[in-house]
Length: 77
Image (cartoon, rainbow, N blue to C red; front, side, top):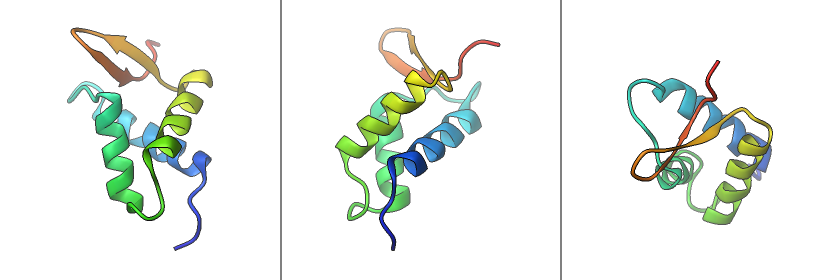
């Protein structure tokens, strides 16, 4: 499999969060584990996921929600 870019991981994270909004709150570690599972341990590691998570937060596509812990969610409309 070709090298996975941070952008690809960020896009996949965004899609995952978008698909679970209102159904399930995802912690940052849940999102990271899902990406490692999706792309494979050989192609994606925690540091890449951390960078991708920072990218979707900085771009405003996702935000952190705090409710007894931090969760990744979409910004309020």
